[in-house]
Image 1 (cartoon, rainbow over the protein chains, first blue to last red):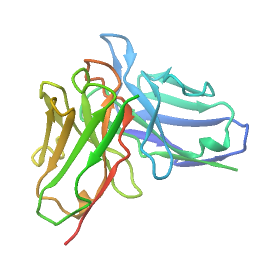
Image 2: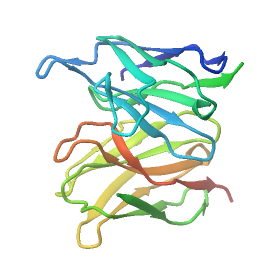
Image 3: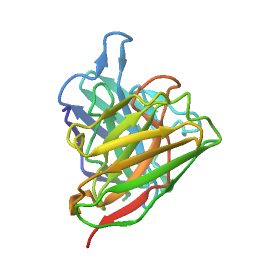
Image 4: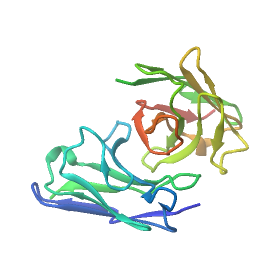
Length: 113
Length: 121
């Protein structure tokens, strides 16, 4: 199985400041067939299902605020919230869909400092 | 707007079979792949398996011997059965739609609200 490791486990950021979450996969999730990274990011708030933010490592889902961005390739990826808002308090998960079983990172909890 | 509604018992006895259904509205089940994912209380996410409209499945090897996912296109419904459950199977179970029509690409753009299933005698 591909192991997904996120860092940090939690972070506290002031309102309006940048939040950066890292995700590392135990092997590359880059498909050579389409040159796309099979990596996605979700946001989960308490009592709610995960919400898709980013897919193909950097494609923002329609309707997701542009303060959310994804980057990286191969084994190292980053989710950036450029200007943290109160409603962004949540747990964020990365997930690889390069090969089954699809696997998730352990989650990163984002709070307001 | 796609809506996913799960149904099934919230309490299952050890060694018995967990059964959940997920009905999709606002879209046909035919043109997408569908997955089940679970989340133990306070913990992370685990992909259980997927199915497409024709019944083609792919299961997580960690659960493969106990899992069956099926689809009923006439009811726009998918189902999950997990046999021989233990307390370790206590979790919120989600059904979710894959994000690309006709492809198995495993990111999920619509999720059900989730059903907490507790395994206890």
